[in-house]
Length: 234
Image 1 (tube, one colour):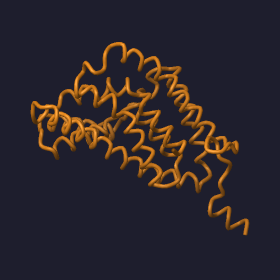
Image 2 (image 1 turned 135 degrees about the horizontal axis):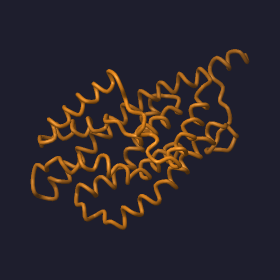
Image 3 (image 1 turned 180 degrees about the vertical axis):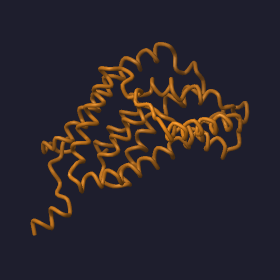
């Protein structure tokens, strides 16, 4: 597996405890269209599928932005900065949550939350998918960190794949929570809280190494020339 995709997967899994606290209440608030296991599983997959679709679209957008950073010669700086920010978020809990949107953005988020609230009680397949998609747009420190990671990619496809694997990393905990809260016991939650900072720190170090371009295969590849640099060389 590509190291960056593995990084995204680990970041999603590392943030499971955070996801349970942030997205868990929404997942539990959405009613199941039926009482059986199959109906609940279907609704759970639709919810998480909608959230994943939003992450992939955001990743594609930020990947395109990352391509522009590469052309401008700034992408490696962003990778290092993102890694440092992740490390700081471990040392200073809640750091990423302090970037509160203001102005028109805050108004847009308020409207988004209203739309999500109106949609919560609907159980049609398309409504469940939409609820998940709207959930994926809500402000989230872990999501910010993942998008910073996606911005170190050079194409829209790479950015989308990064966010796809990040989203999949969050699936086990949220699916287990919705399928039955007792599947995630207190001991598991405590373990997740303890291991999460370690895993996030590992991801941060990998992003910093990637930005340093030390020539380490897979982990910290050497500098790749941009099209403009290639033209100058020839």
